[in-house]
Length: 95
Length: 483
Image 1 (cartoon, each protein chain N blue to C red):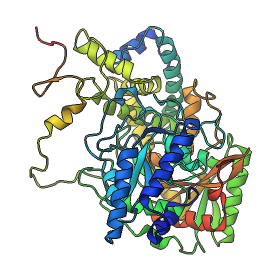
Image 2 (cartoon, rainbow over the protein chains, first blue to last red):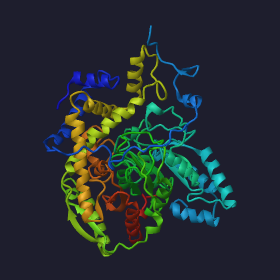
Image 3 (cartoon, one colour):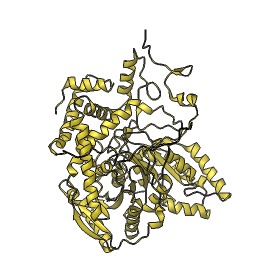
Image 4 (cartoon, rainbow over the protein chains, first blue to last red):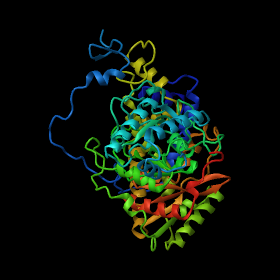
């Protein structure tokens, strides 16, 4: 699978990554070579094989529905780039 | 003092030969004097370390002694350490102060350990050479023109250079074992779920596993004893009893059945490494072990399957870095989309962006069955290969890496060449099995790692085997020239 400039731009948009014009050719080349490495899988017959999502096929444990966390808004917002009145600030979304 | 293991230091502290404050200060001074050559630390936590050491000394006087009382260690910079920066080797988290401790950090603290600082790493644990760090590459203490391996390269180099007796690391595709091999130290990746992932910055959640990086198997057993166990805060942590790892270190290896996978001794393996690994196997035969050739027929599919699944999980995990709640934010965003795109575009380095894009592509509409589902099926086949072999033998032994430490810049421009570095290690992460790397010789004057792979939750057996080897040989005691 070989990717071109427009493929890279589309993927970068889906991933919300700003990629500069100069970086696009390098990503097209390197991601194409990664995909051709990955395409070795396609020759393998996997019909009927159950996909493995977790090495120990574990299931979610349940716990009692009790309050275990306290409100730590101020402490957790100390790492925020911009806050006001306990809210995260972002550029205006709704005019 | 700097050549003593954790276990030996614990004895010396108990005897009162020196205090934890003296020991901690000596290590802090050594890091400050020498680390400019290696760049193995991102953050030095001198003040809090000395406070922890002082507390350990006071508690010892009152008779309150934990397994690691007053012993200095360091954490890979992806474990959250309350009040200290946790950068994950990225510009994205250069300003991030952990609001809480990772569970394993909490457990090590409770056992009395002293945190000297946070070690350098490949950005978001994505790399095999420690060259993708925002804080610059780490250099291998055996030859500073060479890489220490990655992604836990800072931890491996710091232990090898005797800047700290033990570190934590994490292993998603080989990130504990490969740098341990390249730096000549002991590294253990436990069974998936053995150690809690809570507070460890996520790369690929169904692969990520923390573990100890030390100078001996005995020290790895000591560290694992404290780190392992069920954690209600990590739903994937294993609900399995934690055995006494040190109680089995001296078990006899007579009758041990060792399998050598022929695919791991094939083309591409450095002849010096092949020779040293064979010599190590002969050492085990002298101890009464039986050796046979085995086959892991889907070995060549490991890298393709891993490089779909891990980037797919990464693309999802790293979507949390949006410039809104924490982490880097770009200057003067014009709208929300610009905020997301430029914060992520400027905050992430090129290898992280590459893997996010590979994962995004694999999960995008129309490609899911051909890539993600297919890779998950192959993951099952690889697991079955191991389980079949491990019915027949007790452990599998193999080289940890195909080559000794390579030069800085040698593989940096070719991601596929870099990915091949993990050819012998990432199969275990696909299967979730435990594995260790221990020093077993030198090739071209550089350390060689022997990998020991066992069944699920067989860490006690792996540590026993590694310890017996270290009683019979002194490769683990060798240090880089001048150190």
